[in-house]
Image 1: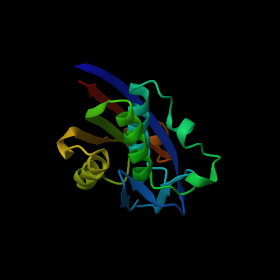
Image 2: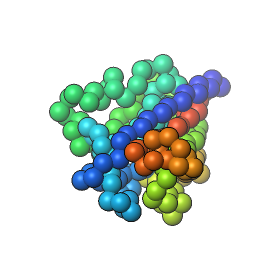
Image 3: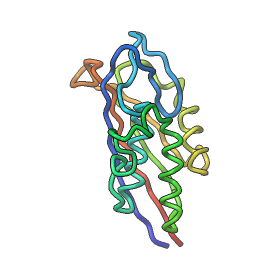
Image 4: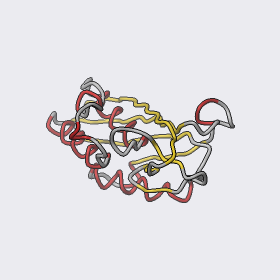
Length: 161
């Protein structure tokens, strides 16, 4: 069996007037903020997509879904994740597991972790226990700590028999 590992990272600015979507779930920020971006700006799914692409040296999500392409304006990141999954499968690989950590001061993400993992797992065609989603604060340090943005780090492990 062959294994490949990839890591991904994404960060988006928090702004008023935008929805806050993480792991395909629409959340309410206490200050009414959402993530700014060309698509739905789901940093969790974006970091996972970059980890999957990186594991096979396929570049990053900007290569496949450029922010200046009007086709991706407001796109549902879970739909984009399905396209990345197809790229992985076309090359004969399958997802062993995903691990991720979202960095945000607010809102509290713990009540939403299960739904996020389930939504991601469903789109990848794997079991929810193959998708790790964790959340942490930045202890009021940096952009995340000042609630200027939310970031995510992700790792993907792929196998080919």
